[in-house]
Length: 76
Image (cartoon, rainbow, N blue to C red; front, side, top):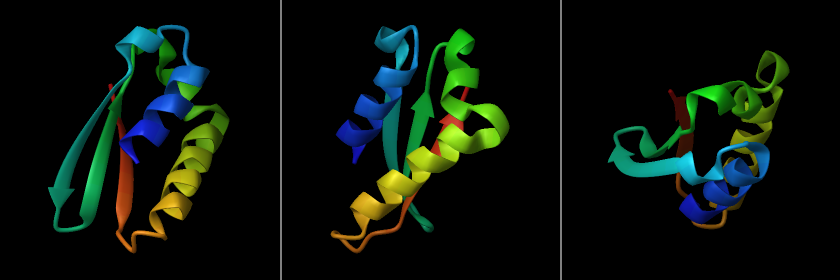
């Protein structure tokens, strides 16, 4: 999952070297915290959150095979 989030995020931003994904287990499931350069935060979120929602949908769909709950948080 971590690699999938990195590939998607790096394709969207202007500063791919600043893309970081931190994985941690929580009571809610596995949480992936995505951090990007401050100039790229709008590109990751998208208009009205459409890109962020699409990214979460893809990651959630990929996690169905492993039957785990996956959450993607975007932090600045």
